[in-house]
Image 1: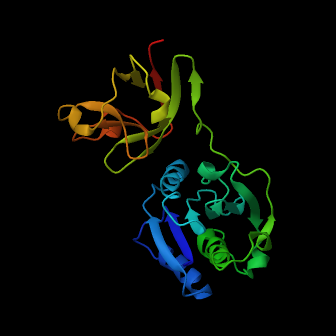
Image 2: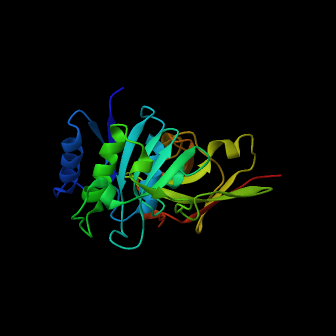
Length: 259
């Protein structure tokens, strides 16, 4: 099985940050296959990074190493961690970025100890290069993660990731705004199966039905539908829902129904 390191950051590609990290990984083993998930997460958008990570982890081969850096707390007391999960190994900051995989399928979490990586000159502002990239490379070649650090029992989980249900409705949040301006929530399709009289509300805006696709409404009209991740999205046919409806990540979205 090929050794895969999949990278997700908010670094963009204008600077050399991603290339430095890639160079560190390849310097450990040039046969590691590096895959870019994205480097266009909005700067410091941990929630957005967590959402994008959640959409790809089931598409990669089991055993993939995910090197993820969206790290507004770099250099502070936040912990650098490695998570061993049923689907693979996750390396990055302990700030909620790994919320989608922190559950019963987690086998082990450790806090990276720089000395165990042989890291003697760690930048206070670039742990992606000096801690996370070498840790990911070593995990990719099969080194047990307990060799990289000390056990962690309380990794950080983002607030508002879970749903709040009631007898005649459910409340969720916007997790991500994609490049088309679609506001993607954590409300799953199965939560509305068989429901009648559905009402979707986001801020001051409300809609009395869920469409099947964007073309079900007129150009410029807003709609709710279930997107490719089988969760509720707020969209505008031919437009940008986030801008037009003033929706941001973290905003509350509620769905109610009859009976």
